[in-house]
Image (cartoon, rainbow, N blue to C red; front, side, top):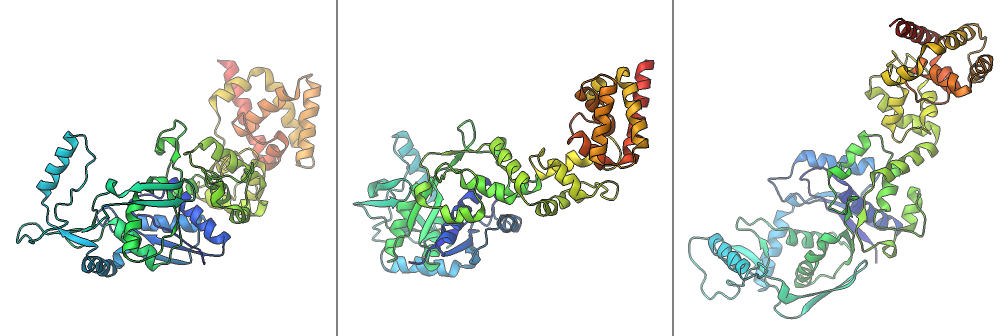
Length: 469
């Protein structure tokens, strides 16, 4: 059997972590087995669907490299097909028209709630002898079997049994003729030859209903794998306060594709004790056996740790190519400072995201922004002669190189009988404005002689003014 999986997002908002993880799992499974991966846009909710949301879905899939073999298909372009299936089910007496008014259904629900019963349709129109004339435009309901049970062999949760007595006759077509979710999903899966359905376990309760429709249409069941939901660190449903932003926001924040897909794959899936995976390793390793039943926990700190790992290990040329658009977006004047590749290389072990690389590299370009607290702590009158001596040596040094500059700092510390840190830190604050930077030799080399001297002069003025107050 050739494997066919699908990702069916609804274009009613941003593409979030839970949805893209579902897409990733379906993509990985299809790729591992040489199958087909389909993208289907479930846009039947016309009131909430938008082209902007469609564009976000497509952009997110492209950024993450989740290429699809077919699609995108749009359900709104398949209404004729759904109508055919509704008429087929009606003709075979596997569905019926329901004329119950909104008022009757609301009263039925209220009565059931008072009696502490599960709200459900009571089958009032299931065996109507006389069709009402005028008044209510009918919906179409599926004729759910009254006896027996549906048993689903789920690849994650094992055998799940649902008694048909727990199910009512669901609506498959609204009064205006538009199809409902359960019908469209089943018809699409049949027509597109879907063999494996990998989705969140919040869909478990939908499965018996969809199995009934599948069997009524004479179709074979796909294989189901309902994956655990993703919770926040507090055990509650994942939300924006946990870091569940749009996938494209992770792109804007400077996360790497490899790190994000690696992290998402490990949310609810394991392969031994391995934590770090290349894309090919994920494709070769992903299987149902590694999926967990319990909910996964989203941990932004762990994602940042993983992204930092990728920043430190990605080839330099690739990292520079990734970082350049972030430098350009920040309005940094790249012609007023060191080569961007050198700045990226200096920051890659210190930053957790591409945006941090850029933010931490501002010191190499343009004017200095002095941190008041760092200046107050380190630029004191006591270090004025030390910085003066270093400035004199910077003017005289023949070769402006990290090694030569490091030697100057070390020799100055010896001359003043000071620990190296007591010299290097005031110097760092003087030339960068901050108490954090790459190693002092790399920092000085990248800043260049002219910029270091200019900033040392500014620091000495600051010290003098401070001494005078």
